[in-house]
Amino acid sequence: MIITCPKCGVKNRVPTSKMDNRPVCGKCRAPLSAGTSSGAPIDITDNSFENEVLAFNGPVLVDCWAPWCGPCRMLSPVIEQIAKDYTGRLKVVKLNTDDNPKTAMKFNIQGIPTMLFFNRGEQVDRVTGALPKQEIEKRITKIV
Picture 1 (cartoon, one colour):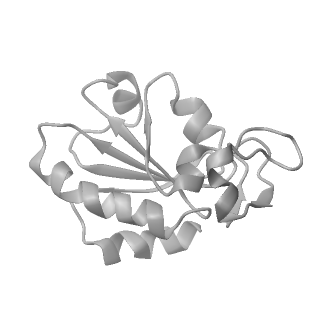
Picture 2 (tube, one colour):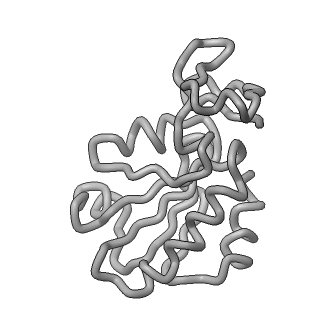
Picture 3 (cartoon, rainbow, N blue to C red):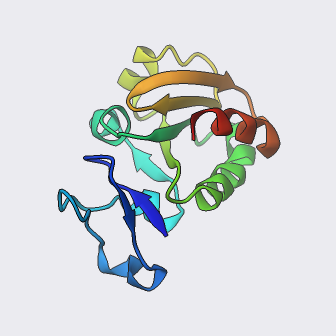
């Protein structure tokens, strides 16, 4: 499995049998993010947004959602599947906009679900609404 280091951007080859052993980057020794390697989205907050998204030297999909939102709940399994399908190539994070209004306000999130697409810390795309997986993947292929 190839995992991109969130700190220096170097691609690391990690055997799947070693994934539970908290792998570190071969160059800078930074821990390789669990969400990037495990195939599960990472829950982020206003406080962790900069480190997890803006400082990440690779592509990131930010799923902006809220627990009361029906379309958000419908989209959740799709986001989880995308995280698995793009393990090592795309970091997938989830931001609860109710609990993290500062980041939601900074990125002008007015409707949910909203997906923000970043590459090397720069927002490159966004979409509002529960799109089918194929439509989301079309946007992902532009940044991966």
